[in-house]
Image (cartoon, rainbow over all chains, first blue to last red; front, side, top):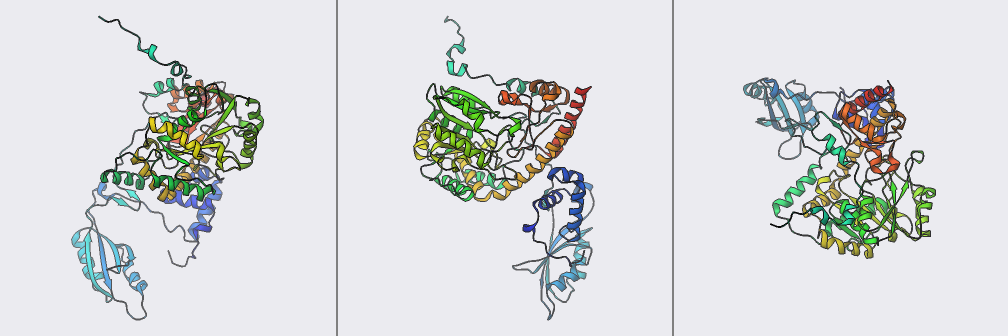
Length: 175
Length: 393
């Protein structure tokens, strides 16, 4: 999606729109019919609101969180910290754009502190990722140094805990 | 050989005279059943927010396991009074007008014992929480029941209250937002009650444990009405708002005279509320607003979902404005509340609570807690729809 969306301050949004966003952020597959029954609107109204939210870019994308460990797929994630030097007339945006266009790169963030930019990169093997960093990232003019950290295990991803939660027994009847 | 004896003869009359709970039988029916869906709970399905649990754990690691002041930790009382000032502009003095108790249950018990002399009449508004009548009976008082009705959305009217007041009436127990009806009362409605309270020189015990769970309109503490602070013990706790039921933490707010008197009982019966829960409660008040509001929004969605669902399957249900209970009418099915609930459990494995458990005025209704996941509510509604269809044939 492009960056041409206008900023919509959520504070001035209708309460019901906030509900819709919270419901979808929690479960993107919730149907407009279900959402309608949670917030006392009609399904058509909900669909219209969602369309508006998509158009204005408040809703950017719908995704699935996959626990690839359970699939047994061979992959590695790495977090890569970059120190960069800025060139005249070019801000961080320019270097971020160069980097995020690689499909191997899953996220790009500008950070405060010792490093400037943090990426997560996904590859089939450690060698794969190491070569990608060495060939594609480290060689960029603005990149001063890279530091690669391979992910050994993911416990929580985007708010979702990736293991079976223990169920707590409660009394079936209480006052 | 000494002769055998029947130990039950040692049980005091007051205890023997506690009215039997209609729910006991229900407990037995439920236990052992598999694949049940329960709308029968009186507690949130959420777990206590992690930051609160974490604070409790941290305090245990540090070794904070001592007694506290009888009144409760000063920081907690301070946070509570600040919270009430912020929310309602209410002024309570943390050092003399707050008592931290082991759940609202304890607060209720000592509140009643503090104001009721043997023979005093205490008006109890029903349908309501099951502990009020026994508390009054145990204190030697005489419960006088006033009913609320569906036509008034289960709020208490001055007309209904007036005839119940006699020269022996000492106090009224109010419970809004209400368990089991979900009813709330507006400021105007409460003002009418306050007028009667002054006219007849009465005292009020206001159980406001569902204070934070209102939808669309803000709660009105009874003590915030003009002239009511001195005539009211406000009861509240952390169980419902912060999903802390098992931590057992409640509180009472009232005038120094009343709080001191309540403390006289509390110091010899409970001594103090558990310190771990008190520390968790401080954290809840300081940093728990976002999580609490998130839970309230979630209840709100389930509320719409379940009310719409009941009306769809032919069980009339008005929109509860507080707590987390729906109270659908089942009177037109030809079954009593108990018959309906028992057959529903037996045939469809859905647990609900018959409305008459909360007083005669609840007959014809079912209490269905929507403090359950949407999936469970959906399944329960499907099964209840089948059940209702079956009754028609």
